[in-house]
Amino acid sequence: MSGRVVTSLTNPTVKAVRALHLRKTREETGLFVAEGLKIVTEAVELGRAPRILLYGREAADHPLLRAALRSAADAGGEAIEVTRDILAKISRRDNPQAVVGVFAQSFTALEALVPASADCWIALHRVRDPGNLGTILRTADAAGCGGVILVGECCDPYSVEAVRATMGSIFAVPIVKADEADFLTWRAAWPGSVVGALLSATLDYRAAAYVKPTMVLMGNEQQGLPPQMAAACDVNVKIPMRGRADSLNLSVATGVMVYAATA
Image (tube, rainbow, N blue to C red; front, side, top):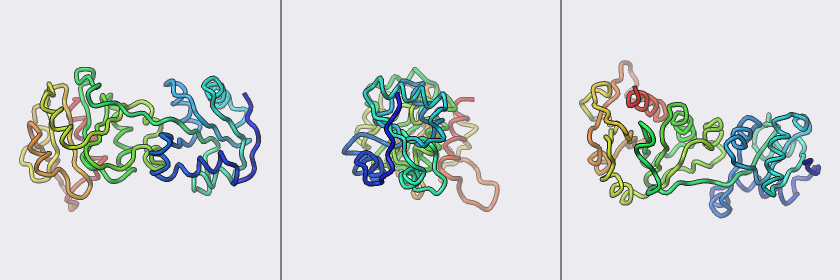
């Protein structure tokens, strides 16, 4: 499959891909942008075919791109060779990736999760920073977590910033969205332990009993876990600060908690 060549920023497909920087457009279309041949290849290897592939001439003969082009063609997708200027405008970077893919978003229903299928799961309450969320998704993938549950109003895991931070793990980790009430009702039947990280807790995170499957529940970057979410945990723990900083970055703290839960 070889794509046609486009040099104009006013091309309808190029305009549609650029519009996916907007959350409103992503929600309306159910699509998102993934940048880079590595991430696109991860998607293809996991059975996620690109709906649209934009690529620069320098990548045209790469065997991994050819595999992605075949995947797009088999799924009825569109492939376009574009200029470096178009890639820069789409990525909003001066040094853009040579390949950009557009994919369908994927969310898993809360009720479809099988807790016993993994030793550890992550729940995030009102996470705000897409970089943190993307890094947590990558950590979940690396640690073999079952999935990431977004509780309440969270940032978009399919934003360009979040997807970049996942380094391809966006395609490997089940993502769930749930409001607080539904999550708390569902959590009541959780078969293992729910462990919350709380600055005001007194129990050291290393001393907690992590009964598998363990759900690690983390609050947002500013307020942490609110009382109703902390109360839903079997135990709340703290990660001690040894220096002047009073807390860890959320993604770092989540990684510490996940590896404690899976030790």
